Length: 210
Ligand SMILES: [Zn+2]
Image 1 (cartoon, rainbow, N blue to C red):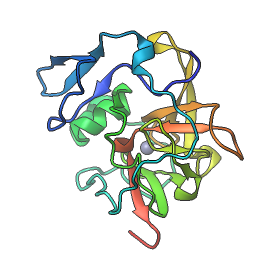
Image 2: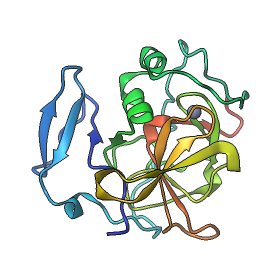
Image 3: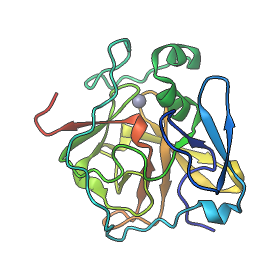
Image 4: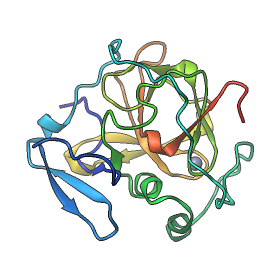
């Protein structure tokens, strides 16, 4: 198994219905529910290809995360941030914190950008760092927003990830170090890369938007 979209831990929003019988629900005290696979890993991992998806594209721009109480958020400052998890925990919505700082993964086909085609720029929802341009986004069947290259080489950093018995490369925000997703070698030309990202740690700003 060399292909694969993210982890076996899946982040659920409170208002999301559990997926069918493949999962067992373990509610946690903070209201976040985690789902652990009771099936072989192979059954969890959706084959991800760069083939054109037949999915319907969202028509409206999803609302970005609000940042009113986040003093570190800036779409112009590229200086690296060194902020403790305790501080991020205080600032970020729980759903963003769990993905960004605990490397959890949102469920496939549930994020706000997996099938979104708007023209513009994707920023880190934690710190505002510019990450991807929409022209590098492609329709992937894996259920997570997928890009073939980052906006700048320094937009992201990489880290080896051997969790869950898999050898993968984790993608981190180049400014704040938050977990964004993973990168795979089955993307389309010209790079052949697939940045498999979590929607919840991305903010999309349309062309000419603020
Ligand atoms: Zn960031």
